[in-house]
Image (cartoon, rainbow over all chains, first blue to last red; front, side, top):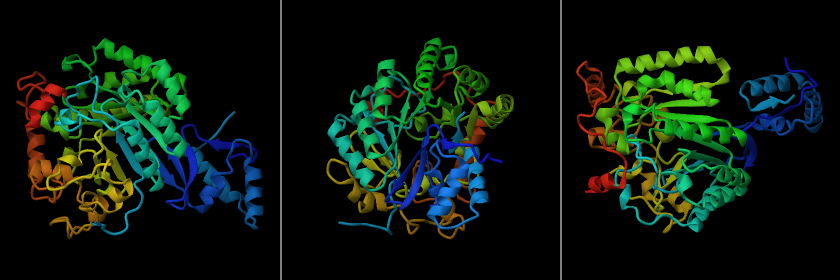
Length: 90
Length: 377
């Protein structure tokens, strides 16, 4: 379980950018690339090491005029931490 | 003139082989054996044009290799341009020439990643690990890599003559603070192809090396990730080489020849364009050399009707050519290939009790200019 007040940031060695040729956010890392789908891109670009998970959830809910995203965001962040796309700096 | 097959996606991976100059003479190098024929390397401006045009087509991952890319004194300029264009920049180096001044300049230029390869830089292959000069150099470079906050990624090419030292290699990597280690068995192209009889390990050697690797993984846990790449001659299905030629990968050689795979120059009957004569866009989308092996209409049986053809694309064209003489054949690594016996026979010979001991009976051919000229014919 990821704490609502943890502040995920992009993992060391990773870079995220918008690629017009692929019409997607991509995550770049040593000798590899992950093409992110729309929602993954929206979550990842908010993980700046400043905002908390709770703040990211509420920002997404207001941007997309929806509710109940907390579980999905938590699950994504947990997966991304496991894959080292994200890290939580102490 | 256009030979376009389908609508190719972007060349996501651009590999720039900046130079064939190299302080090492590795017997397993994949560089072409006739590299000494290359007289004129591309200029800084040529490389920058390649980077811009590649990026416009959607290239994102950039490999800078060679030879030894550090022998080019414009490496920092090339990295700087690549970084500002939005590439993720990977330097593939032996570490020879990586001084603190250079790593600092490369970091400043925006270099994202360094892959340090560990080779035997001496001619005493059997002294592979006792070569203290190499060890000291690599340790120094490894410390610099960590000091400049790069992940420490070590690549070790395995073959018959060093595969029994996997334990020592892993311990050395650990003592250098490596975070990732790739134990990559030799792929048989270029110089390695010429030396294949001397370099292919036996089944028993391979099994022991995998055992040692697994025990090491258990001991170190997450601290270090170890990737063990089995030589594909021991497999029963071919690798999806380059994800299919002309699919995601574009190599530019030191003289500007553009290739859909770094070994493709050996393929007969194909001409490959030069970046001095044509744009990357035309080369990638329209040149005959890049379109020849797109799609599957070139395939012969058993690939043509194989349900796995979309998974492995018939394997490696260069391997099909080197082993069977026809690049359109199925990669003989596949046990559905009528030529699969060529691979198993080679593995059997390497595994036989009377197989050549790691004592030089037939000399290894080192990658140097003299041998290159001799092999150029």
